[in-house]
Length: 228
Image 1: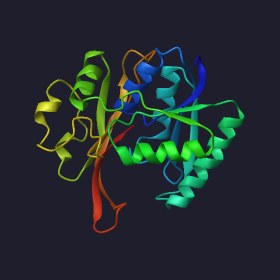
Image 2 (image 1 turned 90 degrees about the horizontal axis):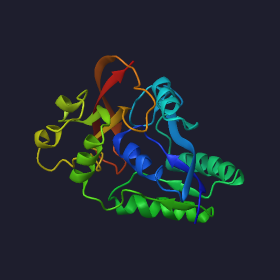
Image 3 (image 1 turned 45 degrees about the vertical axis):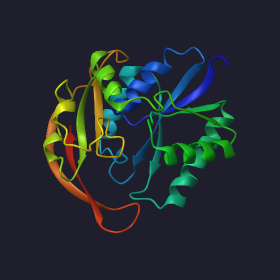
């Protein structure tokens, strides 16, 4: 395998960034696009809530073209899958063979991604798979990357808007994964080795929003900090 044309599934957060950091050093892959889903109603990164303008600035600083898949607000699974299938078909026809993710240990999600891509003749790649999340975060900080928490679950309000540093892990409540791999929080990376220049922003208001839980039952609540 050599220089396989690939898309990188880009959230703009720390796990995506570290996975991309490693894949860019792997001569087996040629990353052609940063693929991101964007909420069409608000022009923001799905779930993370980051403005499209900052996402664009990120990609420009990294130097890899951004490929947006625009989704309606809270799409049903079939709508999401139809959109993904349409765009991945187009990418495959343009020569893409691999799709790269920053997932770490969610087995069901990995199996889902692999199955859907396999149906289309594409292969999934997971550079951070099964690594210790504390070590991942320490490596991320040690490499000089800078990231801010832009979204945090209810109960973690104090972490929303916080720049992750060496004290971050120690301050997390018990049971919270250091990388937020269970969806506890999401981040926006604004500087580091793969960036040509820092992404400038100012911090706006902090808001609380609720969403239907994907597994049914009660609403799930999240705090968001707006980056402008």
